[in-house]
Amino acid sequence: MSERRSKRTFVSYMDKSREYYAAQGYTQPYTWAHHTDVPFSTLRKPLSECRIGLITTASNVDVGKDVEGLMRNRDPFALSVDPAPARLFTAHLFWDKDATHTDDLESFLPVKQLSELAKTGRIQSASPRFYGVPTEYSQGRTRLKDAPKILEYVREDGVDAVILTAL
Image 1 (cartoon, helix red, strand yellow):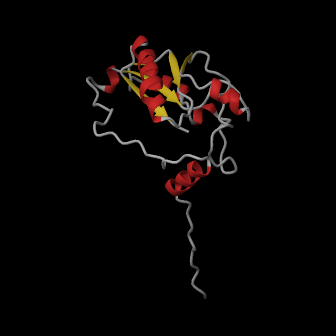
Image 2 (cartoon, one colour):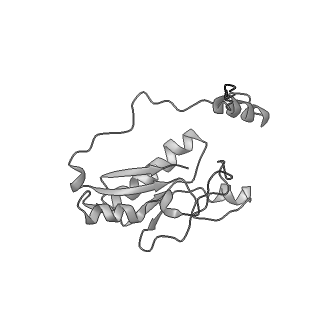
Image 3 (cartoon, one colour):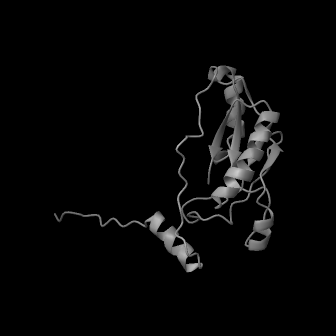
């Protein structure tokens, strides 16, 4: 019996990103985000006493392949979880659309599951809103505009911790 060998190949995301930006005319290679101070912290109280929120990078606006529309609709948002939206939009993002889909909202924005955790006492409560920060490739915009806006939303809702479901 012949030995079966796998010829694994991979795509270097970092190299592909650098090549992509160079092809777009950027003279400086893409610089990966680096934080000397990690922007995370431990919980100040037990999880069962915490209000938990959800953050997604999906968009609440269906821009399809309209790149200009996409650029106009990248602002952070906060929407009610009751009722949860029928869908969010991800077609403009780059991911393997042949291998998976985002038609099942609960697969990347687990609103119902978070509510169940509150009912069982695992968490105190779920935030009344979920938060969106559509994918942004600008570290400056993320740090200076998007993150402060999301922080404003979660503070308004008395959220103790968030779960980021990035796409």
